[in-house]
Length: 310
Image 1: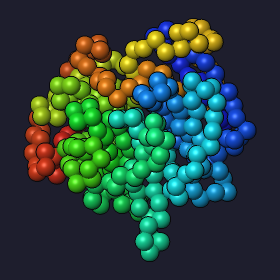
Image 2 (image 1 turned 135 degrees about the vertical axis):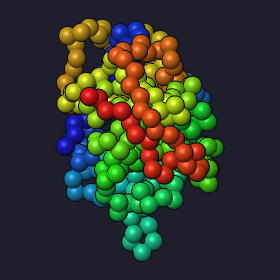
Image 3 (image 1 turned 135 degrees about the horizontal axis):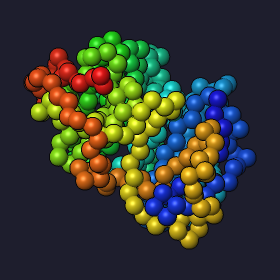
């Protein structure tokens, strides 16, 4: 069960604000999925919260405006969620994995989007691959940003094969442009793609929570000395800004870590940033393997071996 406290934090100016609660939002929810984005038309930052109450089947949606400092309810489509992964903000839209009851009462997994300016929902179908079928219970499906095309990427962490399958949408919003980029893993626990780099590499989170810079074409990886074994570990994108410089009502210090049950949001997120080579200091020694990255559609059918943490 989830509470409904939000903290909006900007690490650049070391300030944060506690978002006011609203009677519109139920005090407890079975699933909660949140997104943060910028409305360029009104120069406003917004938080979208979709949730399912214990007794409900479909989502309810609420949006917070930083400029108005208030919440409002939104008419929501008949979709459901089964993940609390953060939404992905691209092209003014926050995205998340959802599902709906399609024809013949068959459930279908999809990407849901919400435009922060128009404040409307839209749907993008996932690639036509067996691993994205709703009834496939052999792994986790999640999203990240694909900066090369200002688009999105979807990953399937296959618990059966130990691989992570990566698909990218080459042209944003055009479902026919989903392309399988690669598969990698095959050593036990499944890795997770956290972000794409400008130079073609990936930032990967291992099952131990360590961050690794990985280059599939060269089958090279380098531990970044970031992360470790935590109870809860998540990677978000950040772009420097001065948001909250004048309105932040709390100064952040190391003792001000907050309650782990709060839903905190980073005010520096933006669809235009990358994890670049000079933004992360490399940590420990290189580790690599001798596998090749072959296959059709820029992907590998067999999967690329990924180095373990040993």
